[in-house]
Amino acid sequence: MRAGPDSASTGIVSSSDQIVRDIVRGLYEGRYAAGQRLVEPDLMRRYGVGRSTVREAIKRLAAEGIAVTHAFRGAQIRQLSRIDACNVLLVMELMVGLAARQAAENISTPGAGDGFRESLDTLLAFERQGDSYELVRARNRFYRTMTRLGGNREVERLLPSIQVHLVRAQLRLPPEQRFADYRAIAEAVLAGDAQRAEEAARGYIRRTAETLALLPDSAFAPDEPATGPTPGEGEDPEGT
Image (cartoon, rainbow, N blue to C red):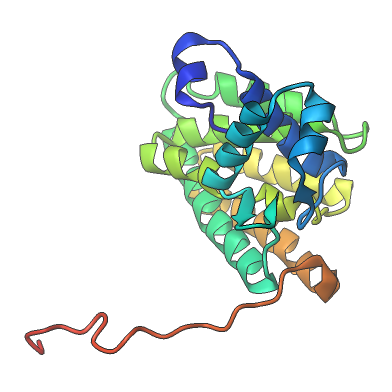
């Protein structure tokens, strides 16, 4: 979750920041669900804040693609269509695969693997503890550390903007499979095997995406029909 400019510059977490973080956390914990309406009076009572703070939080959620707002109907948690969910995970697969490859390529730098090993140990400590938001945070730290190790600033900038939590809360591989995949990714990175690291990372996301087929249509927003370009759009005016 990206912090707003004020909190980033001062270190102070605003009330709207706290609401945004709690709603994202609630997606994983089941307190919020895709498609759920965000009713301003309800949020004001729940968080003990004024209407302006709630509206600022909703504006943040909408800007980050977590919520959508409708004229005269208020806001709701964004619900992806099945196609959109597949595309989110496809982009995630490509970017995490690249991050793993580049991390493996950079692992020989002295001291480069220390933070990565620590993030892996923290993640593996949750193997027998069941799902929790603390596990989500440990997993995010693992990916964040791996991405930084790869040294690709564009991947580091773009990866947090992919709203994978809108689908990940619904998609859970068996714990033994998930943690086996985490180990496979980490072992390949630490061994400096770029090809194997990329394949392990992409394989994990791909297996997660395969569980989409098991979800009912009611779990998704209706697929919107594809719209083609308007006449002349994308054409080379010189005809070359």
